[in-house]
Length: 327
Length: 254
Image: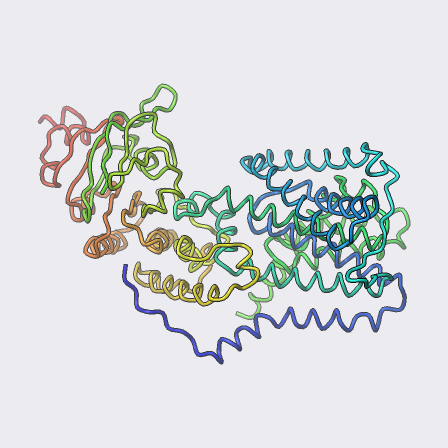
């Protein structure tokens, strides 16, 4: 096949396209920079940090679930293992926190690779069951290895420090987690809009078609699984130092389900949807606290209503409605 | 280009494809025909790596490729379309075509996240090429469309554009005219002829006899999984066994 040499659009219009594509990210980053000046006290900083952690985890998980179409019901295991990796390496062995973070992430990535080679051959409900099992095993191991992990009581984690600088207090941590979230948004956005991201999305749509033009399905599924797990492990390490304490609950099934719910409610295959879903699900317990005793009920009602009225998730459904109004 | 020998595939007790042999020279347009259930699509699925054959050999330019996965065959210049549409409905039309260029682009996840130098520029070029391929197959109107909003006939062509984006040496078209009206079938016929003139070796499965007779230089006829006959369109048309298989024995002999 011969095709005419591609026309390259002029640089100025490309710069304009780049700026308009990046505008939401810049606006969001600006909002994160302004936010601390209106947060009244440490409690609100803590809430903002929890939203940012969940949003970053949801984005990583959405790459797997929403974009590639591979369910994981055990993703909290990677978060928990990253957290315990840092807790043990720093707390028990006296490693520098930075090195402990990198090594924990690498170990979790290696574990995810081995697991992925085995379980990503499965599809649908079988993959869901296998990842669920993985999560259960991880949290049982963390609970029972009392000598290493402190068992069900958990263990405390020293402060994070790098190059002699100690990170302590909600305000300092806020900047780290805000930066991690913005980085996740930018990196995931870059990935989605690239040949690799397209291959992942094509596998979701038609694996048969993607393979027929050379997409190595099992290799790509493995890579995105490892990427998503490693990102969760890094967030786990940071969280462990921020919280100063880790418990087996971090890796447990309810946390995994919470992450999947954020992805689904916010919107599959939508980065901003993940941010929205994480914000909604993290803030809901705080906002619904006044319903004393009925907050779980209210929460369930919100989820059911979202799935009935916005079946593709909040962000994709709303943006589709806006587009329809415009045209 | 392609040499198939003694190819056999059984599903349970049924010989879906049994001892089939044929050869496709470089630059030729070949057709595989036969009544429903004759094993045509199974034969395609064996050659393109969807199924592994139980026995027999498939040689691609001399190299034995029987049992290789579809992605490995794609690396060797094999591309195909599907009888039952295989389009990623979660992607736009143009992205579906760009997937065809997968092997020619940098598909590293890390390079993608870091916006590696040249990656975005290569991807833009691939997008331009995909737009031109869409226009080439007659889908120019759908360059900005989402795949899920496209009609059936356009999706059939979209599959051809995707297969072409892989720059195949050997292209398999599985019922490219199925479900299309007369005008659309004529357009597909022109398209296949044009591809042949550009030097792509093509093997097609098709029920539309007018299309098959017009575009192909050589025809293989399957019936009950076995090769019934092969030859030029003229030879096949006159073959009494072929006529019998298509029209029923009594009529064929009359």
